Length: 300
Image (tube, rainbow, N blue to C red; front, side, top):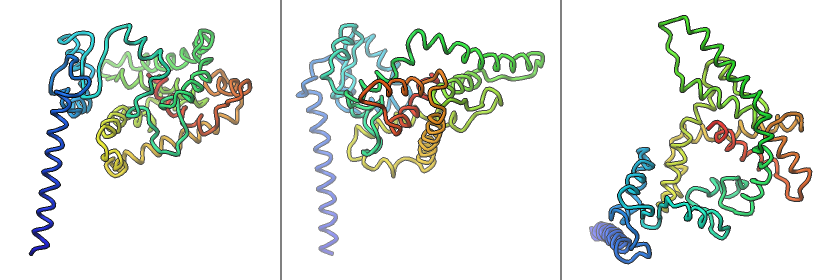
């Protein structure tokens, strides 16, 4: 009986300590924090939880816009975060290499993963930017015009085929996704996903549709340590399986594309040319992780 009382007493003390700590943090964030004098709603300033709830609902961009409309060009949107809509702030923040990227959004998924263009390491980020730079030159973009026209023409042929059927229903959003992902697949891996030709969604496109939600969930948990340490237990099994499928397919497709060498006007050729002329080449594992990111980015 005494042992049970001790356990209950210890549990109550831990709970009380947690409550007191939370109250202290809220009061500190409102009245003592270095950002306390910046304008913003007190509830957002008190806890990150309000920001996270807004993000998970998909309303964060609209909510922050409303806060700027109310409070001005700079708003405190979380205990340790300010939002700016001032051009000078953009220059001060992004033109200063000493400012490290936010670890919440730009950390590695696994410690032993290779760095990517989305990583927080400024040196590697700059190296990847140099490697990809040629793919986004004016000449390179114009050179991709035939590729874009090819997939758009396939889509338009499908539309022409159903135009005479007045009862037919066409999901334009889905078709735009088919086209953009086929184009991004062609540029990243040397082959499309076949969605535009078949009119059916490739499993990779299905993963992409939930990609943003997954990133938002991971970022939200990263704000609340130690919850982020339990991420692999919190994420549903099907989400983990889709992420693993995405990584494995990316690695496989990059390997297949590398076998073609510099024969195509795409992202891999740009990287290979960079590797031939630089002392800091992009490794195969770095190509794999970056292409898994670029295929989503290019589809946007």
